[in-house]
Length: 134
Image (cartoon, rainbow, N blue to C red; front, side):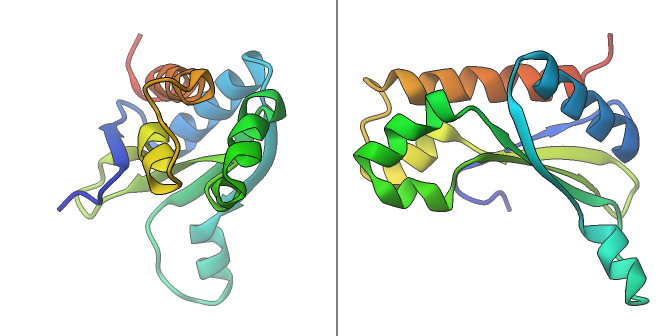
């Protein structure tokens, strides 16, 4: 069952290649990478099994700040996050919060908000490059 507001696409690459492609594309588009959290690596350090599960946190303050000015609670969902994960069958997936959902969650009007549209376009673009075959 899909979670509300969560966009998920299948990657044509393994988890490491998908993450590398994602991070390179984020940087190529001038966004700042704030953190890369390798959940599976942390679990392994404790002897706990976890399939590939890596989170990249990134953004552009010029785009996100207007949302936080309108509704400070959007700061719980920003900066943007993309999760690269692997299912039990070995398929790699790319998931992220839909910016329109974030806007609705915090009472913003996504249809008239240029920042929401910019975020959605950026997320669609970087995840497509990360996941789709050439």
